[in-house]
Length: 402
Image (cartoon, rainbow, N blue to C red; front, top):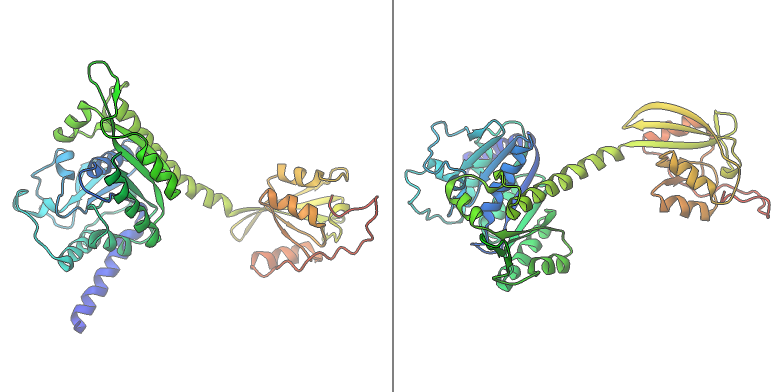
């Protein structure tokens, strides 16, 4: 590689990083084989997210079969400004290679390097802007395109694996799950598409293929089952008419209901983990004390607890709470109800340590002296547990397990 080529590559990588930093969440939709409805699911996920007020980008990375425009009713659209995505509505932006082709009938006959280059251009040159979600519709299999996305897109919140009930589709979906894990991409779950046919006349469900294949694969591979979408005449018509089926206003449509449930599960998984991460940054730290200034060495004999609410490095509310009567097993319950996340103390019996750990409360032993000094050292990440310093003679009237 020449110096100029290396410089161009570095510039492109920098553009991709800058673009991807503006996107909160990234989801890829993939399948082990073609013809399972992957593009249909990608379209409905992206559209469903936009209906819930999310700012969404939909990237059609299936270079050899870019069907997303047809499913959104924008087949034949040509983008004049090559750096701008097509804005379907105020919440949904779309990019597909078909927007840049003279005719949708023209096949794309490219080898690996050309496909990799095209995907990198779509990631780096397109001005996606600030987005809540980027949904990427990948081609089937585990070749150049999925690998390029996995390597270049940055942190991916997860993959959605699409399969049908037949054994051959499930076999290939297992490969997609394993591919995701190999490239450190979390698997949000498996969706079983074409999961039975719903008769338009009587409403009965007929299992044309098999039953429970997707659930079996999800269980064996230890990944979640996101949903099972039945075949309905309305869903087939929606795909051809350019109106995503999740937009259906029919309350009794099983496929539309399942699509909405899948979108809600994705939001809960992706944003729920984000909320849990944010929550974990807020600590409630308790020090046993008898004078409000120093750490009491005997945990079970303190008169009060000095409790600090900490967000990151910022100390917020400080409370002094009277300790309850000294009864075995009472303090873990008492402090648990106060949402304590960390206890810093001198000494504590092993039974109490185990009880707190069972409640996901961290215990740091060996502290002594000033509460404020210990707190400052802890916030710098330098306060390590050195073991219990409780050397009180234990008898039937005293136990540090309180």
